[in-house]
Image (cartoon, rainbow, N blue to C red; front, side, top):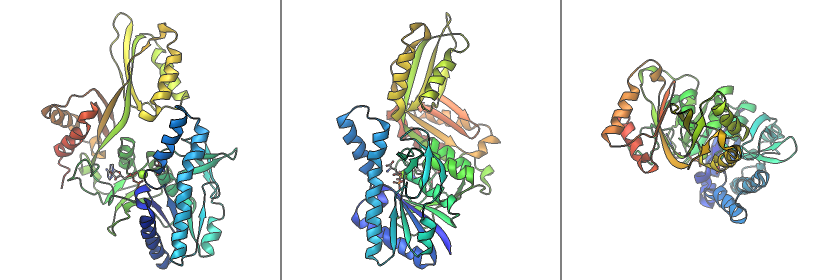
Length: 404
Ligand code: ADP
Ligand code: ASP
Ligand code: MG
């Protein structure tokens, strides 16, 4: 019998009715002759509520305790989902991340999966049980509970699918697949039948939260194909895999927006080798992922440096930089500002020119000012004022004729 991994996100298990609906779908997959591993998220909004409660007590709570707290959300769902399966007379057992022996390393709240041992999942499947695993959580070598970063249940599903050599890994969510842009921002966005890991990774890391970036990285590294599809319909979703035909003909495949970016600026940076390196060394030691970077030409031996970091890391980044700039000869930390980053992504960019000019011209025609620009081989990103973010996304989508 082959194993199918089905992951259900927060909106798919938002309340008891949703959970009952998902249990019916799982039962169908089982009766079609599969062994089923279900991975669930916390109910929609629960993880945020838990985080808010912690910050009502302490502004900067320790990350270890945040992991203990945040994992409660998924733990509630595995029990409810297992009970919903029992109500349908489906034999099922729940397993936490540590019972599934998802072994992690690295810092709390952002830990990395080192190994998936699986605990007794295979045995339970052979005994005819559906195994309902808590997403987003694992266990460190010290026996501490850990989490994989927001949206991390995607990673749990993909890692389990890889470890169990599953026939398929299905990521069920509240949209019908991966679209050319977030359908909530661009109503005429199109569902893509298939997309390769590389483009999915660029879209995810540029803000398309339909898939967690680290989950796509893991899938690409271990070549674990998966499908993104809707919990609320039976339509085929988007397959994400290694190779997809005729992508080269498409200049731009999708547009992404990331509203969770903060721009940090440093002034009076001494114009000498090592000054910028020292700053990025601090960011790396603080586990902050730096994204767009701009350094201007120095005047009178001093330069300005601006870069963006995820909003969730901004506090940590600023705290570390403030300590560094106690020595004022190293430079000065300026005011941080929120920005929105809009990116166009497509492997076709490798072999075609003119993408940047088309993108920038469209923004200019819409009167949208660009604050920063960065590029990679298959992506062009611009930072804009957050108030212009959604408009810039629609303008880019239109410029590359991606609509229905
Ligand atoms: P889940 O709780 O199921 O993990 P998420 O909220 O994390 O779901 O991700 C689904 C959401 O991702 C959609 O509701 C949609 O608004 C958003 N999204 C952003 N970019 C895209 C895209 N390119 N295609 C589809 N959905 C997208
Ligand atoms: N519950 C976690 C979150 O909200 C993980 C997930 O939903 O994938 O980020
Ligand atoms: Mg998600």
